[in-house]
Amino acid sequence: MKTFNRILASIFCILSLACSQAFAAGDNGWVLTQHSKAFGDQYLYISTRGVKCFNPKQGIGWITQAPNWNITFFNEKTAVFYPLSSATWKKKMVQNGLIPSNINWSKVSSGSIAGLKATKYQMTNNVTNQETNSKAKWQSAIYWLADNINVPASLSQLISIASGLPASDSVPLQLSYRNQNGQSDTLLSTYHQQSCTIPDSYFYLPRSYKIAKNEVEVLMSQENKSLLNDLANDLSHDNSPVRGNSPASIISKQHPELSLDKMPNQVALPGGKTVTKEQVSNFLKQLKETR
Image (cartoon, rainbow, N blue to C red; front, side):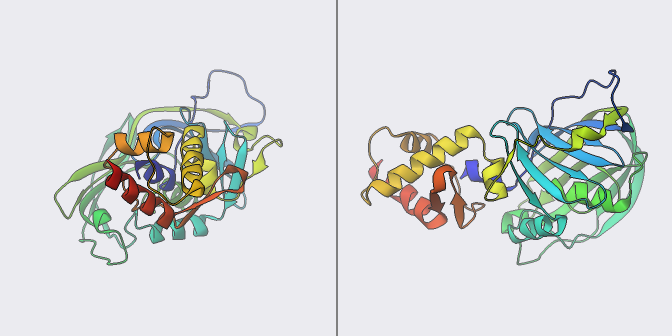
């Protein structure tokens, strides 16, 4: 379903920091205003002490800090978080088939993105890994990486992995690709940048936040949680086809294009309920039969 595709992929990100203000102890850094295919409009805050990505509309994002550089996903609206190692998140992305992992890149030119000096890389091989989703197979791609945002290569790799992009040794600014069907898409674009001081406290969460069961629960908006709760109620009441005007029925009828391709095998819901991929699949089949 479209809802689940947005949830998995995961990831995006932040209300702009007022860089003209005086901050407590912190590092000079960068604030990038970006649009991500996976996360929507996001703000990316980068310093040598930490990184924060935040989607202001949904209130979700992720943070990481020195020296361990583990990733913590958080939801500002529901005050929950879930920590993951970068290796674990990368494995999840590969398993979901969202990003090809066997790409070869070649430097082709230099230029600028949103006023930042950048280097343009071009994909030099066709991705045919059968383990990836057929829709994710890339025939060509262009990747722009920042030249002057000076952070360790390992941190740049973490930023790209956390953002659901191919690993890179420099901070990613723009990525577009063409798949095996000739369709082109842009996964990341950067349209504004600013250099300023970022406080260390910006890379930490309030102590009042509660740990979630998994990252899916964290990255799910209140609207999506309500939808899934309604869906769980519909499924738990009986096994007969769902009729009438329940919220789940209305949403499904309004979006016949919804797909289950990116949904995990099981989604944990608030209150202890769960919905399995098989249940949702059966639910949608029943809806089609009743239309």
